[in-house]
Length: 370
Image (tube, rainbow, N blue to C red; front, top):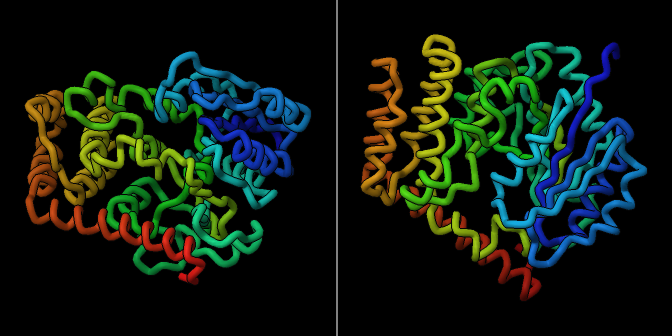
């Protein structure tokens, strides 16, 4: 394979030791496990992760490091902290609830980067399995659950041979076809060099804590901002069949009633993407970033700005796009995002999926097949 390409697996962990062990067991089975660097950061879990059990996995990897934060950093900040320790060519963020099913997954992704020097993202496929669904084997989950994206979908734009897509087409699909173009974070592998070029994972393109407090939004998600930025720099590779199982546990922060992001719906999404667009232009210039910025403006127009604050106008003016034509596009997008009709549509969608989740849980409780 020529020069060996290294991979860091970053695992932001919180509370659940058994889920973390399941995730580590899946990495252990990877064909290149001995070439993988694993870094785990326990984000000051109230229920401490059992470090002794975790460190027993050291012998299976090139390296394994375990850190425990003295204060709770938050979901995004914990990953940012881990990213700043990376010394390898590539990195991936493995959610500690998840499981890598395909034993070839990491090797296949690394080979893709080796064979395509313009690649900045390997966008692997995944399935999702919720805690209230019937217990199944990993194989049954992969085979019977719907994959998160389907490359045969005629609505997808710009897929080229060898399952490659350029950045403009990729962000077009993120903006226009997000409901059937998502995947799990654990299925995404990223170029470290490219990420550092745009300021690092969770870097200046994301909301600061002061900004989030002023805007009264939840800061600890970056809403795929890094994917939009990296798309300006290169290509994206996909896979047909899912390699990753996204487990949604009852303890998962994403479904927790205490997750502050659940009450804020979509406002953080708009602010995060708006700021990412500003930094894309600042770092890479209007001409190079223009196709991606247009797609970010489309995405913002499809979201809803519910709770503007006194600081909202200041924020949008502070991160105003300099190119006049692009700036006008974003003005139109923000106007659409503040539209009452679009807010009502978003509320309907939000509560539809919330109700669906509750119904599934009740049917599971009463042992009725969904």
